[in-house]
Length: 342
Length: 127
Image (cartoon, rainbow over the protein chains, first blue to last red):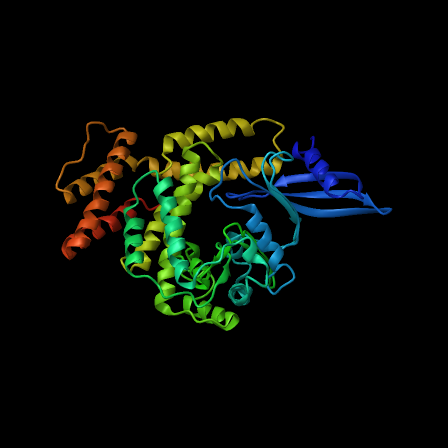
C-alpha cells in the first residue's frame, strides 16, 4: 500500500526546518484514535545529518477543519514548552506552524512518548488495579505542581492574559455561557439554572493566579504499568486563572467513569488532600463546590459545541456525534448531582 | 438526541462508503469504523423509544406551562421542534418562579427536569 498522502508534504516541511539535514523522509504516518479538538498522528522521520542517520518517532497535532473547541495552538505549544523539564512531565515540542500552506491547517510537531497508555477504558479494565492508588497520587501531585508554578517565571504571561484574582470566575463563566448562547441546538434549562445559581453565589477571589491546564482528567495523561505518569497531554484549553478550576474539572461527575470515584481513582476528599500537599494551596469546600458546578457548565458548553460543529457540517467525524450523544444528558445529570437534586 | 438521528445516520452512511475505498490507511479506517459503530449502536438504542419519550416529555412540559403540546405531526423532527419550544418556555417559567420566590413551582420544574434526564438516559451514561 502507498504511504499516507501527507507523508511527502510533511517530509518537505521538516526538511525546510532542518537546513543541515539531507534525505529527509517520513513513513508510517497513521492517525491516533480520538482527536476531537486536534487531529493527532504518529510517524517516523529519518534524515542524514553530519554523516549520521537520524531516526525519530514524532507526533503531528493538526487543527481539524472545525473543532470541538476553538483554541489557539500557539498557547498550547507554549504551555508544553514551559513545563518541559519541570516536575510536570510533558513531551518535547519541536516545531509550531500557524500557516495553512504546508499541511492545509495549522499544526505542531512533538517527540512521541512511546510505550505508554492514555486510555481510561484500558486503565479500568482490571490489569492496573494494583497501581491505581499510586497513579492517583501522581495524578493529583502533578496537578498540584501545575497550580504551584509561577506563570510569569515560566514565560506564560506572554501568551496567556493575566487577570485580577477576583475576576477569574466571571471571565470563565462569561466565556462558557457565551458558547452555550452561540452553539446550543436546543434549549438547556438545567445548565441555565446552574448558571443563574453560579452568578448568585460567586466564589471568593483566587488564592493566586495559576496556570490552568483546562482539561486535566483521567484520559489526558500517559501512564505505565507501574502507575507512573510520563506525559500530561491536551493543553489546548490552558489559560491563567483560579487553581481550583483545574482541581474541580476532574471532579466533574462525568469523569468518574461509572466507578463513583474522582477520575475513577480516588474519593474526592483524598484527591483534594494530595493536591493541597503538592500545591501548598487550600481547597475551600464552598469555593471548590462552585468550581465543580462551573465545570459542569463548561462541560456542557463543550458537548453543545461538539453537536453544533457536526450540525453545521464543519466536522462530521463520528467523535463529534458520540461526544454529544454520550455526554449531553450525562452532563445534565452531573449538574443535578452537584446541585444536590439527584 | 442532538444532533438528530436521521442526519447522523445519513452521515455515517457516507462515512462507511468512504471507508470502503481500498486506499484508506488501515489505522484511520479502524478508528472511523469503531466510532461509527459506537454511534450506530446508540442510534439503535434510542430509536424505538424516541417518539414515545418526546410525546411524554412534551405533554409533561405543556401541563407545567398550563398549555397543550402541539401533536399535529408525530414526525420526530416536529416533536423535537415542539420540545425545544416548550423547553424555552420552561426556562422563562423557571426564572419567573425564582424571581417570585415561588418554591413550590420551582420544585415542580426541577422534578420535570430530573424526569427528563431519566427519559434521555443511555445505557452507556456515565452519570
